[in-house]
Length: 148
Image (cartoon, rainbow, N blue to C red; front, side, top):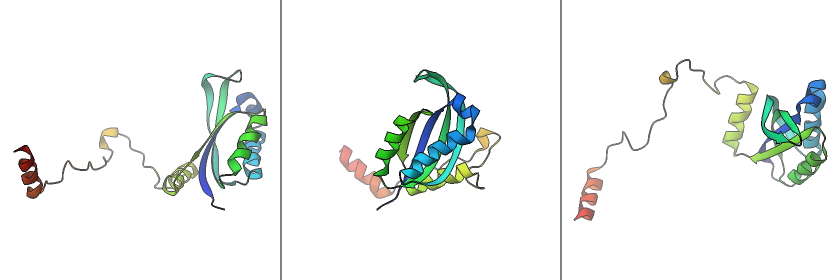
């Protein structure tokens, strides 16, 4: 079966996570592993106020995970998350390999993934296509013929 590359964001109950961080993280990882996932990377992302109350909670911890799994395992993940008392919400995205690898490297803190720039004005800018390219004479002549 084909293994897809996924990013999962799980919002956990802050109170239960604060009481036992390892239990909360392990709970999410166990759900994924029981559903057939192979965990590549995971990390608590942010703990703070939610934009709106979720299941009566105004605060939550975001746990970011990257994993591989056959697509049929997502149904089991969703079922287990709905039964969980720790997980308030979740979202799973399928990524192409290039993006998945870049995000895993960034999460793992590997060198060269992102470059810190003190002054934003000094940051390298991506080349804009079409701005610096010369327009061939044949293209200009073709446009002139259209106007006539």
